[in-house]
Each structure stands twice: as structure tokens, then as C-alpha cells.
Image 1 (spheres, rainbow, N blue to C red):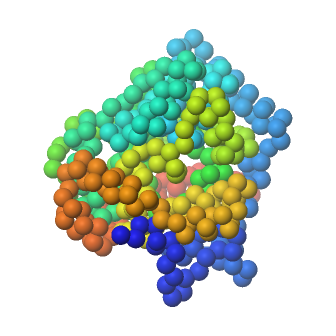
Image 2: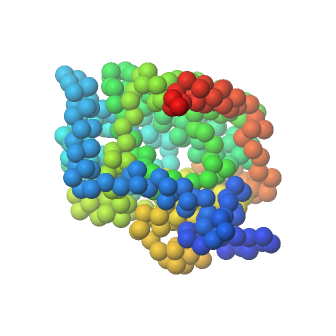
Length: 382
């Protein structure tokens, strides 16, 4: 096995950015005459929007806190917050405590939690005194969906978890009359990911189409949310309002990790989103081996843009396998057994040619129409 080694393969026409570590494994990448990629140019253009003085950042967070508290006045919870045990969501929970908010903290248990993730969440909610709701998914349905997506050979297997998280948060917010959703979404550590490396998480039509083709069990309890309802809530304010604290401060991932370790005894798990056993296996093995995608390139490039890692440091890390060989063998055996695949069945899946999500039914046309209407209705006046 050569997991992680695809990152150093050099095919004819291969090109890598001179500033970050994004390369032609992104099929849509472009370079200017100096060899700088479109991701770097976009980061440079948008970065000033997310740069604040200490005073300005403090004021922005204070205004957000006032807004949330006022909207939730008299209620048990004035906001809702999803936590995975990872860096971003954990730091937002820390900020919620600093902002004197009373969130309903929600954790989505899809059967793949690592021990470190569970320990991190427990430490945070106990010290902050927050109420924790664990949304436990029906394992047999979820397992059937994961098997279906693997058989379909589409790139975004994690779409299943992300979709269920959005849907569960939306339902819980409505049930508890909560107006504000605190999100760990942030520009500084998430702006580089190429569009071809994932699929739109709210595409319920696509999710159901893939499951209809390859699934075996009916989806009776799996949480769902249509694109229209999500967009109406997030973009039009017809429901919950999404608040992004990390986009209102000079968010530095390494400093956030130091704070979390100091305040909660929080532990790192080795990679972005590796707090989930399956996500680690998917990102560090399935994506490189089957799709030629090493997400470390995007994650490292974000850190380069944010001044947290040098390009030479990133290149040196990319020379190393994404997975320790012994750990890979252990995790692979665990994942295959839990999903009910034999070694031969999984090898056949990995050998299948990757397929586009658009080879299955999708609501992409609806999204295109919604974007067109948004541009027509809300475009700036001349």
C-alpha cells in the first residue's frame, strides 16, 4: 500500500504553486505568470476582511454576544452549538463561555467517535457547565448509507454525516425555539478546499438517489433537510441565524489549541477532522488511494496563508505517508469489519473508477436557479 505517497507523484504536466502546496491534483487550479495559484490569489484578496485589531475583534464578539443574549432572553438556551471534539467547534464552545452565552451543546454520534473526541467533549461541557445533547444516529441505517456511498464510488462519503448534523441541529433549534446557531465555520483555516474534492452537503436528492441505487435498508429515522429549507434558514433568515465567531476575530489554530489544552486538558488527534475514526480512514486512505486527493494540501495551504506554517514545513510533511502503516492496518481491519465488507469486496470498491455525484439525481438545477434569482434580486444598484 502507498497511502500518502500519491502526494509526491509527478505526472507529465504536474505543477505546484510557488507560495502554497496546492497542485494539479486540483483539476480546476490555475496559475498566474509567476506561478501563484488561484487559491493564494483568493486568500490574498479576501484576507483583509478577516483581519482585525484586538479592540475591534473584542467589540465584534461583544456585539455578537449581545445579539444572541437579547434574542434568547427568557429562554433556557439562547443558542445552539455543535461539537465534535475537534479544534474549531471546541474553541467556539470556549468562546461561548467567555461570551456568557447559554448554548445547547449538541454532539452527533454516528458510531465512529474516537476516545479522544469523547474525552475532549466531556471536559469542555463539564468545565463550562453547558447542557449536552448527544444525537445518536440509527447505526444500521447509517451503516447502510456509508456502504451505499462507498459502492457508488463518489468522492464525498462524509456528505452523509454532514447532512445529518445540519438536519439534527435545525430540528433541535426549532424544538427549543432557539434563534442562533453558533458555527465553527471560518475563512482562515477552511478557504482553500477545492470544489471538486467534496459535494454540497444539503443535496438530499443526491443522497437519496445513491442510497436508492445501492442501499438495502429503508431510511426511517435518518435526519434530513432539503436544500431549500437550509438556504431559506441560512441565507434569508427564515428560521435560525448562523453566527460565525471565528470569522470575527484573528483566529489562529495553533493558539486555539494551546488555549484548549490549558483550559480543558484538550488533546489533539493528529489531523483535521481525525477526531472521527472513519473520517481519518476516509481522508488519509480512501481519498489518496482512490481519488488521488490529499486533503492535507488544502489544510496546510490554509495554515501557510494564515502564517502558521512555512511552505518548506508543509512540503516536508507531505513527503511522509498520511497514515502510519501499522495504524492503517489496524484501522482498516476495524472499519471493514464494522461496515461488513470483506477484504476482497473492499478491494473491488477501491478499484472501481470514481464517479461524479451528478451521475445520480441531484437538486443542483434548483440551486443554480436559486443563485440566479439571488443575483437578480439582490445585486447592487448601479
